Length: 141
Image (cartoon, rainbow, N blue to C red; front, side):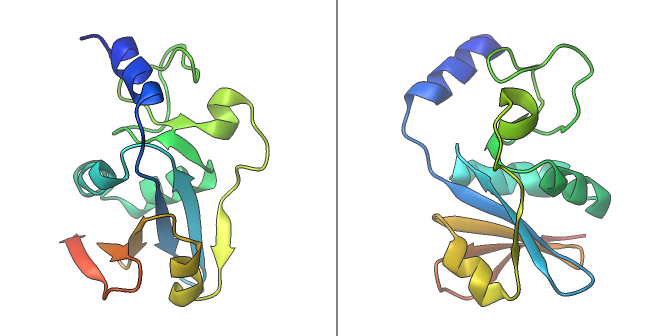
């Protein structure tokens, strides 16, 4: 099955929403919405988003349709014709507005924004936050 077929199938199935967040050095949490495959996002994050600057770059571009290993395309890339392995952003790739990251003053405020699961990058560690359960470490770098 080619990449375009995978995208078409993702657009037709129900999705598990998630948030991806980072805690800044100033103690502020910034988060983005991820529409598809929320339960698989953690694996992509711990495998491909191990560098803090890459996490910052991801968050800065805003809400995403789905997460892939890379952020920046090297060839033609859009919402309808995505480049294989490149994250699809609502703003950059679909031209939507109002897709910027959200700011939260506390972890509690971040959790209240969550759609289902939140993945939090804090001090070189990826955590998963499910509703109001304790933080679970996914991977430390």
